[in-house]
Image (cartoon, rainbow, N blue to C red; front, side, top):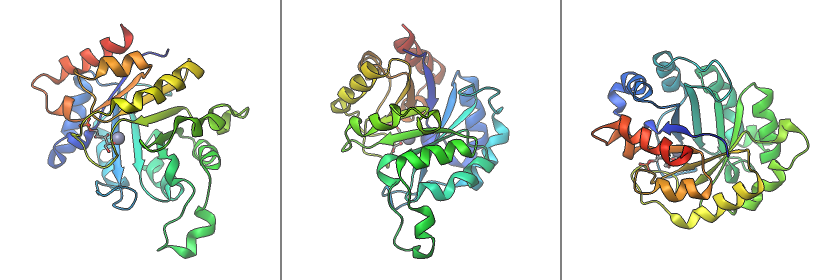
Length: 245
Ligand code: DX5
Ligand code: ZN
């Protein structure tokens, strides 16, 4: 399985001091930053948009390679994910991870844009790649892992996601309880795809990382466990150790 990538979620950072929080977390050993974008439609919460991402980008050195240190892993918990790809790219996003469930539909309140925004997960992976970003596809707890197989099996690399994200809480809020019930999805994906990046997000920390790592996850998001820790470096090291052994 691929090596550990630790991606602290800045959802749990001090939003009044975000640039400094981001650079501090990188200094504490983070590989990526996980950037949670919520629109109040796809999930019942609102965070921030591309202008804020653009303001934090200069506080973290941009990655010099695909999947490299400093990758902004943007978790798009939004309706109409196709609509925002270019804006987030311009803001400094490197990996655009949209929700499978959101990719088919358009928001009813923007009928004029509907036809060009209606898409499918497969077309959207291609579109994200065509814009020069890495593409991730996330699934909520209610969505089975096998919906991702047709994408991951695609003969066309443009249509293959670079990462899949298996949510281990209902998306929308930090600090929720880890759902071990989601781990069979990670296991099934890892068995079928030994080399892909599998991210887990929600409720991860020193108490839950071993089960997630055993199931085969290698990209580890942690919000409250990192930002709420006395010693975040130690938590980041512990998460890495659980995956890399
Ligand atoms: C939840 C977000 C997560 C969140 C995780 O919808 O996608 O990234 O920040 O927070 P913790 O690690 O506290 O569960
Ligand atoms: Zn997230």
